[in-house]
Image (tube, rainbow, N blue to C red):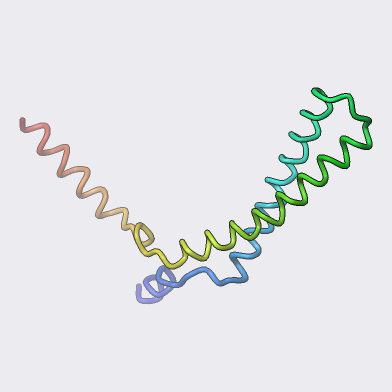
Length: 105
């Protein structure tokens, strides 16, 4: 029991936050590239290579800016304890108590 409590109270390390940021950026920036490419292909008369270059520039800027923002956001939330140590049993008791009181009305 004591080990579980200590494990729950540990925060994510900065390295974990960085790895989470990179893994998410890989997925999200891939989506940004595809969306940019499709939109430029559909709504411009630029050549294929110009569209590829434009979508790539957008994706590079997206990766750099959002990696920094995500990392800062993750580190901020690591220090917020609100909602971090939610106990399911306490929620069940409150839920049952609330519904028991409502059924007596």
